[in-house]
View 1 (cartoon, one colour):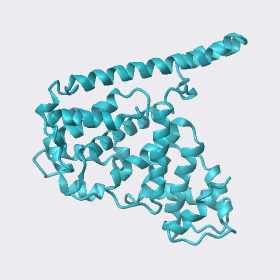
View 2: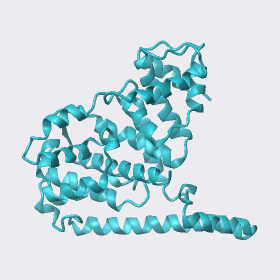
View 3: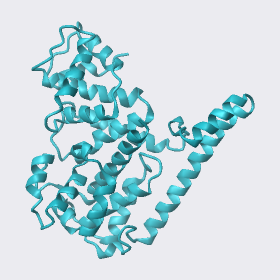
View 4: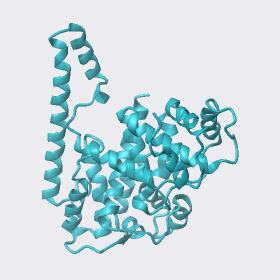
Length: 342
């Protein structure tokens, strides 16, 4: 069924929706089944993050030409932007949990807490953020998305035994989910009350606010066992940052956050926490990568401004910067997980 806001999204983007093609466009959206790499291209296209691979553009246009043989194969960038966003929305609403979460994290992370210019339909990243909040609230609900490896063999064997043993599969899912949440929350609480960086083994008060904001987002992502993390993630990060300094500045620059963080920490962070394939969706992590190539203060900034499309003087509230790094960490993990299952 066509999304209720589909026609309005065309109008918001400055395009005139027509009844003779809207149903065909949505039919194509529902038929298309994006791969994880396609989700990256869709997000880049929707958020206008530089040129998208020509091979993907040809493939994406062909999807719509199958349902409408007069669909243009050139000079329709604005409509492609709309369709890319709608494809991501459809995936979030109807796709598998793992792909839906990856799509939502891609949109939220790529927006960089609204530092980048608004996409052609500003409400779509908001829908993605809303989806992630709901997933955080419902994390205790068992998911079949984790039925893999040894779990898959166990569940399959129990199902084959029939009643009443097949009912044990759902109980095992509940127990595994609850244990993961309890373990995660216990580790996070120890981290919060210890007021120490896990990575650097130092009190947060020994770091500046920009460095603490950057590092705490990464550490909370490390402690998260069930993506997209706890509903109270933002509050947790706020508490950690206030362990560094009780009075926080209203905003901090990305430059200070990178330059204030220990070089040894950055050297450990980048190789284990990201893939160059999603650099455009994880701009803070991308900045850390560039800072390693030119470790002298600010030498990395021109390449960052050009590659990320974000001002060198861009500022965020400390809590928002930390939350951005947290989302980037979860996005990197989701990307790794999806690729390991292919």
